[in-house]
Length: 216
Image (cartoon, rainbow, N blue to C red):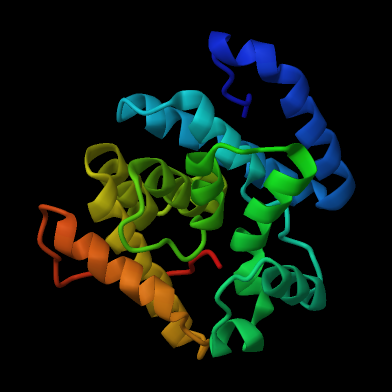
């Protein structure tokens, strides 16, 4: 899939190339392909919802910078930055990779756009009250084409085109069901994100949600 680059983004193409070069050195090829698909889907969703396409694409490109950092490094960087660390984070430091990716985006690439940094930090667990740009990147990470082509995923992609908040709580439900099925720890922030999104979305929950594999 070709990365989404608008005419306005051409001036910053060298910055994108710098990020791509860094990613090539720090993540395996399959993950880089996922990142590029998230970049593209985030841009497409942003365009559909009237949001800033370049910000969405940039956050998509940056979202997994810390994906392969070892647990000790994730915890160390989170502590040094004064991030809130829960007992679940301590038990599974990988859950900090989104927040730490935002730190890397700022420190390594000089990103200062707070909306972009928030979208990077929120892409895994979400956050109650997150803005539309964060919702777009959260959904793109979960629903990009490489995640599969099941009927459930296709339905969620349609919902993401219609209502971002409804899609967020539905994706959270899917992930939570998978975590329970796998006997995995559940981060309290995802539950808070799910409840917030369900309260602000106009649609009501349907009782017949199906289980399936989910992103972590």
